[in-house]
Image 1 (cartoon, chains in turn purple, orange, cyan, blue):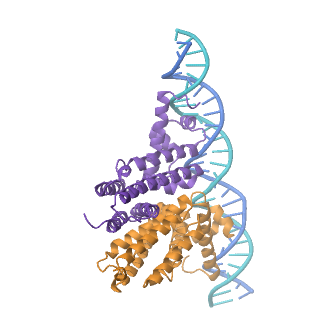
Image 2 (cartoon, rainbow over the protein chains, first blue to last red):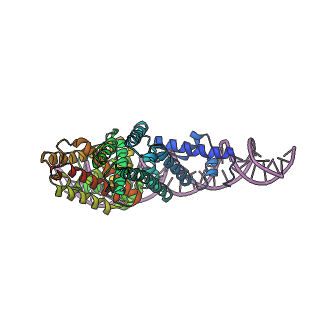
Image 3 (spheres, rainbow over the protein chains, first blue to last red):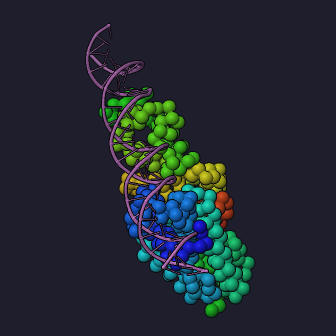
Length: 202
Length: 202
DNA sequence: GGTAAAGTGGACCCGCTAGTCCTAAAAAGG
DNA sequence: CCTTTTTAGGACTAGCGGGTCCACTTTACC
């Protein structure tokens, strides 16, 4: 039945995923029912099960994948091009702006804390997301090290881990406190400390 | 009805809270039912509603408060006495050991990501926890600054924010990846950078 | 333009869970 | 002791939500 979706069918399927994602982002996974998704996307119960035969679990996995993709693309092109200090600051600003704008409706947190807890499949999606995120940061760090902009002995793996942790925690704190200061502090202090370790001549 | 609990009644109430907390920690809030709590704690439905007349919501709030208390007491006496580098390392080790040992059954994450999302009351509990946690870290930082062990111009507020974010993110990453490296990296790099700014490194 | 497959609508079912209610046992308290 | 309050037990209910089913319509393709 799959693989042979008509254009219309594919569009309906995508509409369901995006509607479900939005519903979950806005109201939380716990209170989002298939009926809510159905109503929001203008579909019927049978369509939900037509496109997602395994039911809710399969839909949630598709939503997880959809949200995971968004998290990284939202940071592009900055995340993929951390090759100069201005580029690092541009990325930093993009991240802060993004999470400030999203407020409580945070795809990342929904993914990590709600979807990622439910099924092994969604957990794998989260792991893959984190791995790629960290790897992109790591690539930027290595570039800066090779360019002589930071301490030549910098342990980029460990620094990337710490920075990613700071971002995750910063976002979490924003959801708990409503303020963006933790995210900013984590990003800014890490970057400042990196610059302190680089060649002092400018 | 409240305020006049006999010793036996108070013990039963406490047993319900702790049983519910353990059940939620182990299996998640989404799948924990009142019947699970009832079975685990050897109580009956009417007792649950006797001790928590508002029902599940009231019980969850009590659980949230219980878990929040644990998070901080688990870090004592180290967190309250960050007055020397050995003390900082002892705290660091205690935090890492704690979260490594807990594995997937993490009261902090249950509180922040699951309970904290459900009701305004639980949100307030989370906010209070974070505020106190950060304030204790801040106190330690100020002490080290006044003792001349770190950069005298250190912005302790911002550093405390970043460190707390790193811890939160490190714990979150541990739950996502199963590895403790992010938490360790966040703690260790922060402490290393603090020491670099102190008088001994000059 | 006919037919087979894909897409759509919505009524229905069944299990589960929060919450109610009534009764009984055990403490307190005089 | 005997009464009142607190503690305990468990059957019952109402509603909701995931999932099934079947009838009908549209689309693709020869």
